[in-house]
Amino acid sequence: MTPFLEGLSVVGDPWNLCLILIGLLIGTGIGILPGIGATMTTALLLPFTMIMEPVPALALLLSIYCSNAFAGAISAILVNVPGSSSAMVTCLDGYPLAKKGEAGRALGIATVASTLAGIFSVIVFIIGAPLLARMAYEFGPPEYFALTVFGLSMVASISGEGSAKNLIAAAFGLLLATVGIDYVTGMERFTFGYLEMTGGLKVIPILIGLFAITELLRQTHMVDVVVERIAMKAMKLPSWSDYKRIWRATLAGSGIGTFIGILPAEGGTVASLVAYNEVRRWSKNKAEFGHGSIEGLAAAESANNSAVGGAMIPTLALGIPGSSVTAVILVGLTAQGVRPGPYLFNQQPEFIYAIFAIMMVSNIAWLGLGLLGAKFFALLTLVPNALLWPSVFFLAVIGSYSLDQSMLDVWVMLGFGILGYFMTRFGFSVVPLALGIILGDILETSLKRSMLIFEQDATMFLERPIALAFFAFALLGIFAPYFFGWLNRRRDKSLQS
Picture (spheres, rainbow, N blue to C red):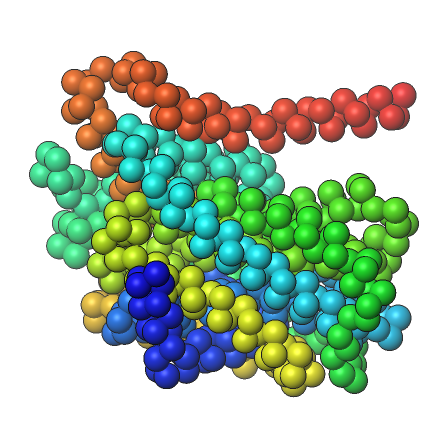
């Protein structure tokens, strides 16, 4: 109980509460603007949090993460353009409701479903993260190597044109993670004579480039695009009859979203798609889906928001990011000297409880913020891209340079931004590349330690049941997309015949 009270007292500090409020406002504002999203926002702000203590830095980043997942629904419902990728399923029923003159009702349902799901996922986070960390005490280098392989295998189902391209991108990220001195052999690798690269490529400029500059380049053709926004008079809370219709969808979305959020490399987009399909499958009103179904809206919003709390569980308990945003947060924690993993729960329990409290306060506070300020936040959909994206570029350059006052970091940021742009042009996702770079060090270190333990006999991995289970899950993650694709093709052929 003492660590829990200490965690609450830390969050109760006026400065931390102020940062939570600032984070909620930033996350909401950014979440409404199409194309930016929480990943880019946290990547841009990460260098500026390096001057803070870990808890205040997390108060800012986590409140942005929580509120951004909620806010994407505003532009999805009013403009039919999701503020984040996880809100794209919200467009399917949110925008048709708005066209019927029920924009306020749609936003009210989305806000309530999102808040309830967010609180649900934080409760699961509070219960599940310590349990997972306790299990992780049984992990040695072989288990961590297998877990990292499993985490990387999950990139096969991340957005992109195919799982093969995602795996290629992750493998390239692993290659880039080898840049610098090999601390086992003492040899320099791929430094090309640059002293600054002996410590490896700095991850923060890479993330800024991949998530900010890449999107900036992709949005250049939309500078003069004007979208039609549906006017909203006021937010309308769900009626009692609405609650009776959406409670099952909200509960299902919350459970599915939290579970999928726990899986490494998955996130709100996958969660909302799965939850929407499952709720539609079991609904008595299937014909309404896609035409303004409040059940579909509640399922999508509850799933993408509950994935936020779920994604934090493997991030803190195992040091394996559950989403692209938690990958950025993981980098920030490591840069602050905090190493997520099972020992964190014993050595700094008050820090863990502070994170629990930050996320709970953020979820509850956003309910009031969303209900009172939705009409005002909706005006942000009118911000022209010609003003927005130059500001993003300015923050990207300043943030990259401020880390070590090195122009090399700026060039790395720009180089990875261009690389990410061409990757997306050819159907590759930048998320697997980022995860490969982040997890590469863990993968290499755990593999070398495992081989020392096994005296260079790799077959001894098969004698470790936990490692073997993770390898099996990894194979399933790699080949499952091909298997289900084959099943769908067979089903289509049978229907055509």
